[in-house]
Length: 561
Image (cartoon, rainbow, N blue to C red):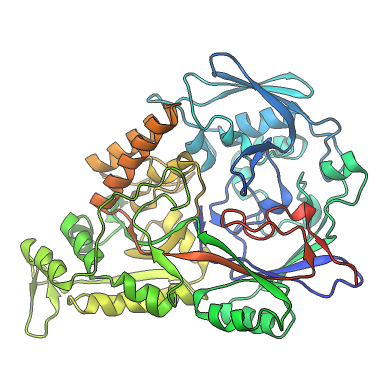
């Protein structure tokens, strides 16, 4: 998933209502988990799948499922659901909902779901066959061995009785559960349901009275009755609110770590350090050489630069990443040289590293026919000034500072960068729908399982945005070209998912990382440490870089006054 900001966790006065107030930098784009591309999103609160990954142990644990069983050949996986599951409207949740969610939504060829890419199996890219055994059992059948088979069943299960009629109305699902949906119409199975949404102000969630843990234990689970997301478009504002005592928790960006560390005892909070954060931050050029209605998505002159490998390598050498760590991250970060997170067991440290070297950058450019005028401005062989627009999401101070430095760094090799922060929803639309952009500074979320990145690395993947196919019913493009290295990475992702031997899987994904660094569809930058401050009045906190402070929100409580 694309991510544009951290979620900063905040708590309001809970003397009357036990609640947690969180802040996010931007508006949600959709309330539909099948269509969502961005993070943060509401779905960790509102929906559950058959299983979920424990971010502390990395083990797959039951969620809606009571348990599961593999066939001896590992090609069939049968789940038994928990007894008495219900939707937030009180209707029963059964195996029919599971089969519907997969067959009619995630696997539907007419619905552009990123999840579909993670479910594709083998060279033929077949999809699972999902069938209902009885009211509480469902079977998944695949065509060949698939290592992440169990993990892929964590997708949110959606209500058949609500959505099935929508599918009968043509393309109605593409706008279904948009952000204008009345909260009462959003039927969920997670610990919370949507209570209200005020544009540019807040999203409020209330406890789901039919949540399965409550039904099993008889207790009011989750313990916190309400969760509120305040839409705060500046990280500075969130820090000020935290320091003034209005907030109970805060994802700490590097520039504020030293200040907050000195206030830890006085403020009665704990700063948790989960090690290097999961996910990546990078810049990427638009390599799509296609056109719409005869008009190229990218200016052909710029496209020639962007698709020149040594041009991209020169950019990588020209960005001073150590300076980003020292000045922007205040020393609280590490270089990222791979599409796979450092904490993943599949991370390969033995990849090409682009150390800061302006002379090397200039040599590469000159060797490709670029040249300098008397003002030391970079020109291409046709005397066009090398200039492009770099976009990122506005309001994220770290990203804005990084963009400003990248602009300055590239000026040193004669390149003019027009840096343009914008609203995250507008940014996502450019990357996924209009496909008209030059260069982007953004990040991708990730976890331990590399196949969850298949939607980025398969050439027809839904997040293959450096050379994106149109999504859904977007206007088609002509003339798109897939490079050999691009196709090879996609092939290796298919092979990696087919391989059941862990060490062989590591070798395959290690090769994908080598190719990614060699050909630079993404120029990786810096990974921060995963840091968060949480007031000590919360109980049940088990912090991790993968899950954050509130991954087990149904178990989080408050100390009694």
